[in-house]
Length: 364
Ligand code: SF4
Image (tube, rainbow, N blue to C red; front, side):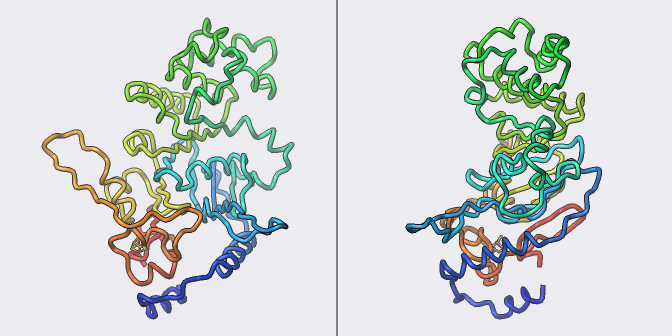
């Protein structure tokens, strides 16, 4: 805090731009610092606890493929999800939402940080233990067609992992698949059909059935309705909410559609270029968005009333590349409230009211 104050005083329009080598050293130090942090205190109410998650993709150059730089896809993201609730994760394309989901699932290894699922640090357990945990954490993908094998009938698509993980005894398998399919609005006679025989909405129901058949605790939903038309979107969202109530599921709902996120979420995190810039309950964030990026994002939500004039905040300025973000606050190239310090020092995340976290120098 003292360091921030000092830099604040010294802040001028001219500042030292880090060279590529200096930035690389700074990032290496950041990785070491975060790796050295003590384990966080687990709260049994939380299904998922993510603390200072980093996912840097190395850029290798030269004859010996030496790592000389990083693409900072996820750059210190922290949040918790309480059992039986939904957290919406929003932000523009390329901000790192999907990488957060994949890193939580351990489809890609983290660079540093902590990811606790029901109190277990999932990146620290051996692969054999992770395999046992897999049924409990599932994912629903954006494109229901490409996430289903075109060569397998529906019974095989839904039942394959159920058999592999011995979720139900062999003799009960048929009855179990019928029950899961009915729960998801599919009929048992669909079992012998192939994915191409279904509409987009039905295919997404098959993906949902495949996930819940494994009796998960937690599902990562990566833009599950963005490939569907609006009427079908509502059906799928309602199905997911019904299943959440019936089965006590916890969701991480990744989307860029704010209306959908408002409908389904309990808490919302807003990401920008790999950082979580704001995190709060749905009510707090929709009634009083604090971060300038969140304000601009939320001002673009259409209002279904012809008499109300929308006051959109248009973001100007260059959009930085995730491979080469600016120093200081990554949003400063587009922020109308940018101050001298914003170009030099990355803002820390502060709790400005109970449960409402913002990373912006306006709240220092
Ligand atoms: Fe804007 Fe500065 Fe806040 Fe970044 S830290 S959002 S540049 S005011």
